Image 1: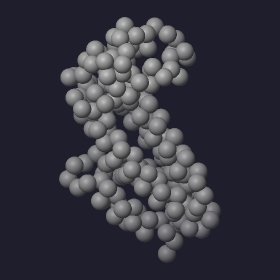
Image 2: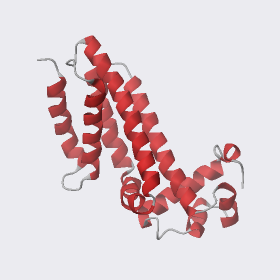
Image 3: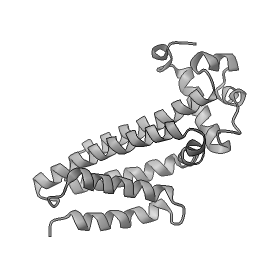
Image 4: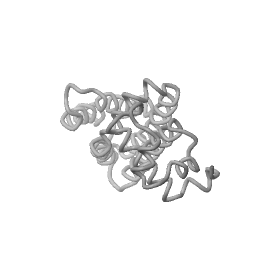
Length: 194
C-alpha cells in the first residue's frame, strides 16, 4: 500500500473515492463491495488495496472528504465581500445547494454512518459543528462591529444557526430547500438591530 502522502493526491485514489461515493449512495454501505468499487473506478481490486486497506477505510475517506469539501465551500462563501447578513444568507444558500448536490451521500452518512460507524460519524459531526460555528461566529462578530447585527453572544448564536440548519437538513417532513429560507428569515429578524 502507498503511503498516505503518496496516495492522497493520486488521480486513481480520487476515482476510487468517487466510485465508492456513488456506490455507497446508491446501495448503502452493506450492499457495496470492494470489487464493485474497483470496477466502477476502472481499477483492479489489487490496485484499490494499494490505496485502502478495506471498505471501512474507503467509507471513512469518503466521509472525511465530504466534510473537507463542505468546509472549503463555506470558507469560500464567507470570504466573499458583503455585510454579515449578506454573507450569512449566502452561506444558507450554499448549504441548500451543497445538500441538494450531495443528497445521496448525505443520506448514506446519516443512515449507514450512524449505524455502522458511530464513533467516526460522531467525530466528523463534532468537527463539522465546531468549524462551522467558529466561521459563523466570526461573521456575527463582523456584523456586530458593522452595526448590522445586534450585540449577541456570537458563539451561542452561531451554534443555534448552524445546528438549526443542520437539523432541518436531516428531517424528511418538509423539503430542506423550502424551509431553510423561512428559517433564515426568522433568525435574521431576531439578529437585526431593532
